[in-house]
Structure formats: C-alpha cells, structure tokens
Length: 234
Image (cartoon, rainbow, N blue to C red; front, side, top):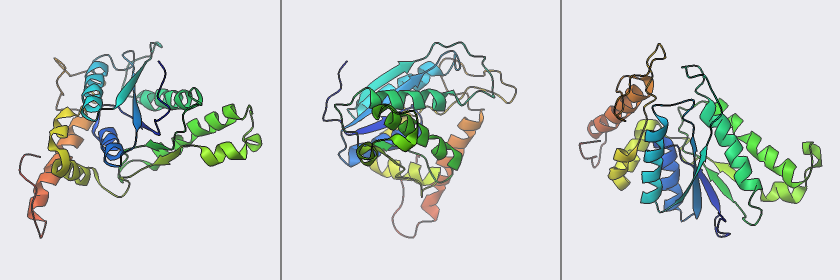
C-alpha cells in the first residue's frame, strides 16, 4: 500500500467517542487525513472486534482511509494492562510518519477532552522524538536536523477546553447519527472478568457508566441553556 502524498494529517481512530470527534474535526477543517486503528485481540479478546467495527463505520462516514495495525503479541488479559492501545498506537504513529517520507504530515489530531489525564499528552511526545531521531540518523536528540524539527507534525487537541458531555452536545447538534457509531465498552467488571455478550456493550463497566453519564448531562443541558435547545434523544 502506498499512501497519497496529498495526505496532511493523521487521526488515531479507536472506535470510541473522543477519537471520532478528532476525525470529525479533521473533516470539518478540510484536512486530508488518514486514520489508523490498533487491533489487539490478545489483550482485549471480547472487545477488539467491536472496536474495529466502530472505527470502520466512523472512517466510512468521514470518507477517511483507515489503516489497521494488528498485534498478535501474547499478553495476559486483566484489568491492569489497559495501556496497550497507547503503547501500540505510539509505535504505529512513529512508523507511519517515518515510513512515508514522501508525505508532509502537518498534524496529528487527538480528541482528548479537558477531563483526560495530562499524562496521556506527555506520552504523545515520544513518537515524534523517535521519528525525528530516525530521520536525522541520530540516536541522540541533540544531533537532530533543525529542518526536520521545523517540519515535524504538530499534535493538536481541538477539544481540550470541553468536557465529554459538551462534546456530545456538539456532535448531536452537528451530526447526531455519529453517536450511534461509538464503542466505549471495555467489557470488564471490577474483578477483571468479562461481562460482554453478543458484541453489545455490557452497560456495567466504568466506560459504559461514563458514556451514559456524559450523555445524560448533555441531555439535561436543555434546561440550562438560555437560548435554543438540544433535541431530546442524546
């Protein structure tokens, strides 16, 4: 596969809500973006496929090419190893940029909201360090070519001032059908046992509760707004 040199942005697309918002932003701003999804059934045997299906629906909706990176590295499944998407995603991002020198990527668009951990954003700087060192044929960042630094893709967080419920209200007003293309379930209980069945959200895990709560807050906002309203059904 050869990517078009006209591509200028990258969107990590997990199938969840925030990354979908990143794709929405890229489309709204006429960025020619390519999306990537990390598939890891070893770590998430019951949710990996539903996540991929959601990402595929979202990519199709935005008419965005989707690259799927599948990992088969053996991993112990449990509630304490949920960082694998970040680790795998950082590797994919670095390889995508470094492996396509014919493309001048300008942005990497993330959907992180104001409630997300700042630690998440600190982690995102490392793929670019690896890329710039590789492109400069250096092991030490002190020797990186200044021109490469000047042209490196910028990590952007368009929604860092919005809460999750505010983002839900935003999408509802713009393209509300997108809210039915989201997969937020981890399929795990507090004891680590999977409680998901038939590729349907469990409704019991932390992420399911978070999604339901944010949508409820967004719906209740119709009573807070001084002008206009958001239709029921969020």
